[in-house]
Length: 370
Image 1 (tube, rainbow, N blue to C red):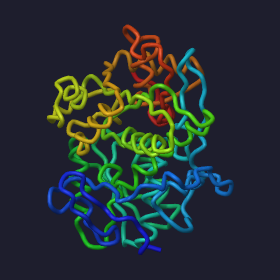
Image 2 (tube, rainbow, N blue to C red; image 1 turned 45 degrees about the horizontal axis):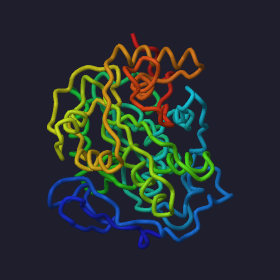
Image 3 (cartoon, helix red, strand yellow; image 1 turned 135 degrees about the vertical axis):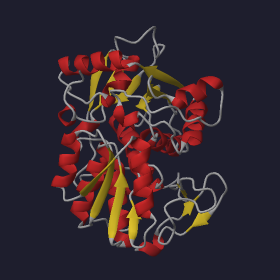
Image 4 (cartoon, rainbow, N blue to C red; image 1 turned 180 degrees about the vertical axis):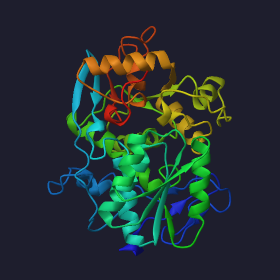
């Protein structure tokens, strides 16, 4: 029932809006929304035994009542990479990307709101996820992508029935085109950046780790960061689990050295990130020159006692090959965290701590970096 949907709240100025009628961004500051939702820390947390999907964590998710959209996402395994490092294989999700965690939430939300059309913008993986879940929900979908997006990813979007709009320029140009379309009547903007329901989907990544480790979390969670959707989802789950007595991990954020506005801001002690040039990098999925949620990302990393690491393309290339030699074929962006803390990393960035890295996207989508 849509009347039971948690509403939006702006983290910058406190503006509130009904999720059924709200514009896609805060009308006062044009910033992204947060969600007026927090699960009861005294409520039951044992995952439901019924749905074989992330909906089994329904007790901590903000979409109440019966759900109908799912592709049996979630339950991705942990495998060891080093003595104290495990990888979570989120490239085994239905569309071969961790973005399924948030896309299923947006598609279920859109199904309940019944728009005429869903629009999204993406450098690839978010678009394929939204396209797939809109197909599952019976929703018309249009995805705006920057020129140069992997043909394998755009082919996947079209296969799911989405209309793909290739926008000249980089990632920000595609976002601007999608936002212009989102301002039209009858359109739902399935933004993995501006819509907070997406973050409450990605937080299931940490709930699964908590479950897989028998009710605890590692010393550190190493997360690739562009727009920060996985890191901010992880921060939500860490905070919710801490309220239940679970020791919180440090959040270690990884950026491409070529496009690292957040790492630069963190090093400078700044609360906000200044935009940087859109330079080419193998890690296209995290090459975001001006992340809209920069302030929140920086605050979350600092609160956790974590840090930022950057990796150049030569280490990304070698990390992708190293993972492939271990039987794990992922796209270059997905190799970023292993590049940051694996064998090719300088010194010991983990300082002996236990850690989990996500392998977020399948190499079948991009091939080997050259």
